[in-house]
Image (cartoon, rainbow, N blue to C red; front, top):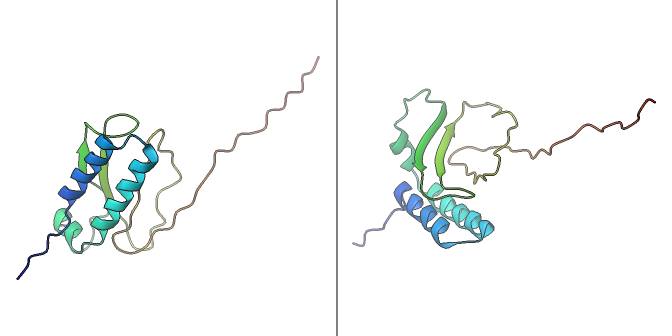
Amino acid sequence: MTQTQTYTLDSFIADVRTAFASTPDPVARAEAVRGHLRQLLAVPGWLEERLQLPAEGGFGRHDLYVDAEYGHPAPGFLVMCSVQRPGHSGTPPHDHGASWVVYGVYKGAIEQRKYRWGYPRLDRRMDV
């Protein structure tokens, strides 16, 4: 019987490190990471095994891996997951600065909105 190799978090991390090390184009890097994340999220059971959450609870942020060597625009990337309560509305709008994020949903669904910065109009009228 042939054994099938399962894609693991460690495989994903190695692939992300390779993408950062070998792909100079930031858009191509993001696409590579997206493809690898899609592959990882298709594997059942890996996240529960990694987190070992209690039957009820365990909500919040869980850092799975921190890398100090590879990343963009500067060294460093983080693999994390957020376990949200059913019906939770998510996090408030926030800015990731110069970094970028690849999101994936392991179980359930997520709704995201895009926001743009709005600046008040400056009234340049001067009283003389």
